[in-house]
Length: 231
Image 1 (cartoon, rainbow, N blue to C red):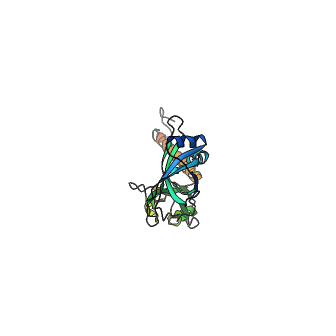
Image 2: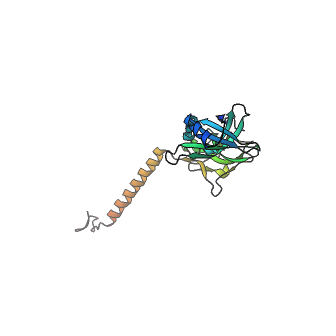
Image 3: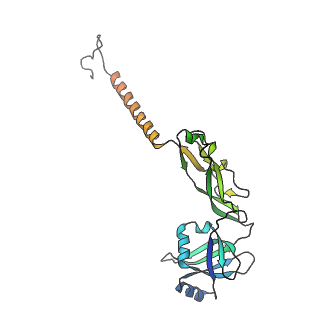
């Protein structure tokens, strides 16, 4: 179970309807509703600045929150919709859904890279290139993993990669992307070595060009360039 589920503080909203929602917005709040879980919907207000900060942090709709409302038990929720002003694009209302322990949800889970010191490819001078430091998984709300583990000791040569199919996922979890075996990380050659190889390729190309030019030169019996030849 993930141990860092962020808290989301809200106030119970007295009154419903457009009038109560407008009054909340005048007080710097964003009205919302909490539904699901076989209990009555709960109208709430959330501080506007708090919601804006959460939205700017990204992935608000795929983050599990521990909702705290005075006078009510804490409950785990996930956002299902954020309504915005059509002109200003600012939040005007949000819908939060209560989750049962057996509910399946999409969440971004961090990747924990282990055994870097035992990685043979890195010992050979390779550089670890992290393509994804988190992966979106379908998980059970009551059994959310803190992270998924990637064992770098399996990488033996520069150019080796680790894809999602090579990662052991927690029980009950599966990736949201199923149509391709996407890369989690790889080991690439250091930039200095790549530049050196590129320079060597350029030198080899110049040598080939010189050889081709020499092949066109005609010589006389003494091995000297013949008259009219390209010397």
